[in-house]
Image (cartoon, rainbow, N blue to C red):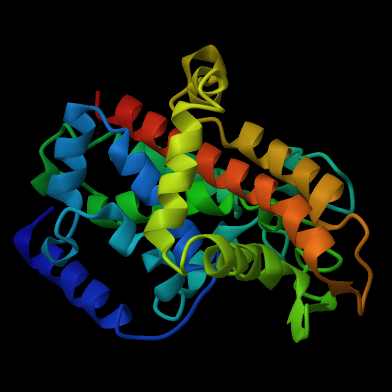
Length: 287
């Protein structure tokens, strides 16, 4: 991208990271996914990511993985791109479900992943002549690959992915969506990882190379030689939402150890899959 345009992006990025706000998986979830992904990049992909990241990120993708949440106030059009709403069913259909609340088709996280993948495929062209801001394309793609793996980002339209289901997380009043975005991860970090997000991420990375090693090649693969396959990720998420997020929960429920300990493995699995698939996608884009 041109020098002037790049400096504008850096200025926006620098500003928004001074502002509070947590959305999506929450900062720790997105940090974990991007940390896993960057550790699995090919040499070509690692070089491209390093070139596209703003200088202040110091070649740390995880440090800017929540950028897409932070710029919602600036890019209002991007808000519907973080999620998918299904009509109370446990499956995803792109033509039926990929639309915003006004019914405009193609306005959902699956479409956003396809779009920013396509933009990044222009990287090998003369970037100074690109029609796209490829730094932003990278940051949006990295974030949305995380969002689509959060089960309640593919939840029911009627309760806005659990946002309208008020519960108690132990003694704290909360909504179900926030439990999956933030509370399960933070509770795990507090209990098992000395409140350290990097220790939490490292434990998931260890499982990727040990307990889940046989599954990783399937996670990385897209059918028909596609670069990325968000329909698959969305289908997995809505099934997980039905089987785990919503199951046994009603308005006013108190969710404690039974819910936390049985759902934590699902959260870890989805974070692992998100990280592995982000890396695989970036490796295919920049190969």
